[in-house]
Length: 434
Ligand SMILES: Cc1cc2nc3c(=O)[nH]c(=O)nc-3n(C[C@H](O)[C@H](O)[C@H](O)COP(=O)(O)OP(=O)(O)OC[C@H]3O[C@@H](n4cnc5c(N)ncnc54)[C@H](O)[C@@H]3O)c2cc1C
Image (tube, rainbow, N blue to C red; front, side):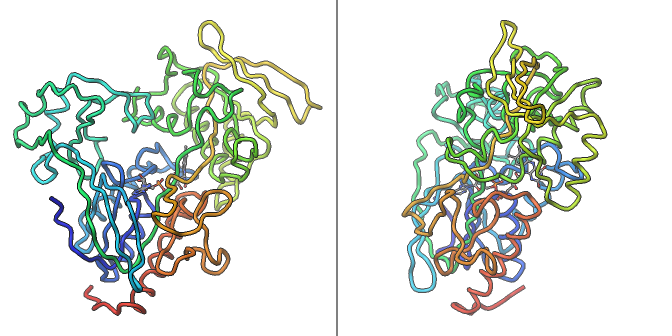
């Protein structure tokens, strides 16, 4: 049974970097915050990234302290593996219905020892590694996960019972049921973040068919020392790639796939990954095919120049097709835009498709705020008050409101928390305790 309070001042939906920051900023002002995350762990996309542009700092080294801070803050309650079913206005606040999904494990008694994982005989492609590595049917998502609690994936479990037998805390509950929870909140911050455009969005790139055509979040994991291979290898045969291509705007700026906007981060993450790969593989040759490079942030243009200085080839070219050879190398057919449209076929060991960003959550009437033509949540006043949604008391932070990088997500989260605090002061006048 859930031990949640009946009422919280603020509810933050999504515990990526924006949601965690918004929750912390609101909690620091003395408000009681419920941070709701649909996945088994908090951390969002950032905790799975390798390093961040333009500083090349280790991503999880920045993200995990934030996760720990949110988890230990006395004014924040974290509710993972939980979906938001409905948010209904009730005066200035809201009635909220949540669905706590069953982990088939008692969260309070699980000690995160992983003995069940080691015993489980079932291997499943791991979501955290974008299917490139595997996990067990009972699993803790990754070593930095919060909470460090096992989740049983009943879709793949064979119910052999080995996990329960080996569990020293006796925490398995095979008949655990989903639980609907009803609470009241004074304000809502939506920080539901991103998904990348589907790998099959452009059929001619065969991104959903060819193993060596990799998605950019998968490439982050491949580059991570705690990733599926521990070093950069190509998925089909574990060979060290010597020639890698990036295809820009593979899932953005293209009306035919319904994503006509620029996703803002793809040029920079491609440059980052390309540069890092040259540090990991001696002599690797990397080409980035693009329409134009957009390096808009502080230090970003300099980073772009650095990548070129360190040997990354930046080619203005439109990739028309990607096919596979018998040994699973890839042939790219490209039209060189700076050379009068010359068409070339070039061979690569691996190709990364720079997919764009799409909203992760489309709540429809469950939340009742407007979305724009691009599918991201709409702001009533994008210039002056970008974090205000179209419903009073509901605020927006991070990529839920449109594509952006980590610094912008964090700044927006702070602004959303401040707007939510103002709203709470105005409408409920809570006693500020901290
Ligand atoms: C390949 C790649 C590399 C990148 N590299 C960089 C980089 O180096 N530097 C940089 O600045 N930016 C980078 N970015 C951008 C960065 O990932 C985003 O700016 C950042 O993750 C946005 O944070 P967020 O909290 O808004 O969203 P997310 O990180 O997506 O977090 C959203 C959270 O909300 C949860 N959620 C979604 N829907 C619900 C729901 N209905 N209920 C409850 N929870 C929900 C999700 O599970 C997730 O945990 C990169 C992006 C990509 C794709």
